Image 1 (cartoon, rainbow, N blue to C red):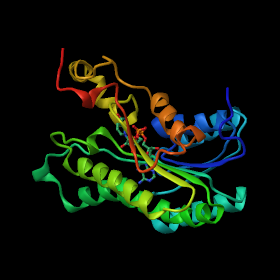
Image 2 (spheres, rainbow, N blue to C red):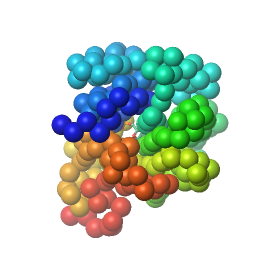
Image 3 (tube, rainbow, N blue to C red):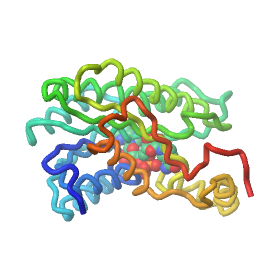
Length: 256
Ligand SMILES: NC(=O)c1ccc[n+]([C@@H]2O[C@H](COP(=O)([O-])OP(=O)(O)OC[C@H]3O[C@@H](n4cnc5c(N)ncnc54)[C@H](O)[C@@H]3O)[C@@H](O)[C@H]2O)c1
């Protein structure tokens, strides 16, 4: 396979499963050195670390809550101490929400907004000084098609992913003049822990599939491919963009 990320250092958050694990493996197979984190599923994080090392790449894996600035700063500092630089940041860690708007309390609001938006704010602030000094860097924030349109019972998730999208644009503008690309990938429906319960329901799976022009649910590696593209030289002029990867879901209201 082509080694687009040889010798580069990539941070991937939320890498204990799903899209984050797939992205970490992509970078590993294409020559990068990895720093990965997650706060839940430490066993999963360890499995990803082993898979990255089996792919021949170095890997630093730490338990980090992406809502906590001190933990993030320590993680980025550890990455810098181990590798000397950071070239790529993928803000992938995220959480879902399925509570009707009327029943969302302050704790739920903060849990979702802090995990999906505050994390982007903290992580970008932590890596940008290094990227600016290097005059080089790639940041990809994983948003969602649910940041483009709304769905019943997902109001704060919708708001958080919409905020992460516009924050992506704002940071892209703010780093003007540096050779740093800041973009987002907005996945549609993908088979991961986040959607496992929903997709285990056959009727639900059929309903979603009927609304996707490609007539299938996506796989984590298909999102990882888009993340890797945005971090590659081929995307040098892509900046402040949100790449929707959803099998056509947002294109239509048709269903079978
Ligand atoms: N699966 C989908 O259909 C889908 C669709 C659109 C967007 N997304 C987004 O993709 C991203 C990855 O999700 P996934 O589908 O791979 O789910 P997943 O549950 O497999 O992975 C989520 C990851 O985020 C980590 N995480 C959650 N809260 C955290 C916190 N406070 N601190 C540190 N890590 C934390 C988890 O430990 C895990 O590693 C999320 O941002 C999600 O919103 C997923």
